[in-house]
Image (cartoon, rainbow, N blue to C red; front, side):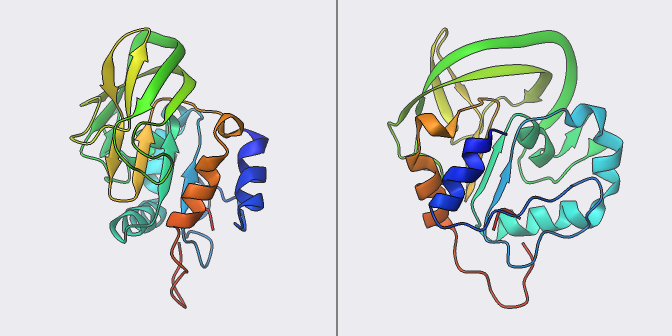
Length: 195
């Protein structure tokens, strides 16, 4: 993720607490929201899958309605599976590696309201991945891509906003404020990541 993302979240009032999904079995105590950036989960699919306790906590956080912003690798992690390895199961989608590289800049519009953007918000971002998620969009897509092609992309489900699109939050600083506004105060004694 971009350094500015953590800076914007901190400026909006968050306590940003990084954690390692390969090694830590619990979300940081008091987690009220979670941001899962890009990366290469296909390289670590067996290890991510083996961390069942954390996958269950992420699924529980999503089920509780906490805001979760997931882009690219985060989208794959929230799917049911990645190359047959169980993932968090938050999204009704399966992910797999592909020979095809998807790469390029995109212009998009938020299809509906989400923890990151109000309906109609226009953004620019990029896609860079060698994976396919099926289906590519949920009943409530995260974005409607308008350039270079028109298509629905990603998922908005409860508090979850998951998409292949990488958006630099410095170009839309209201995303951090909106995300923090969607975070409910943590219940005492509950765990939960992206505090």
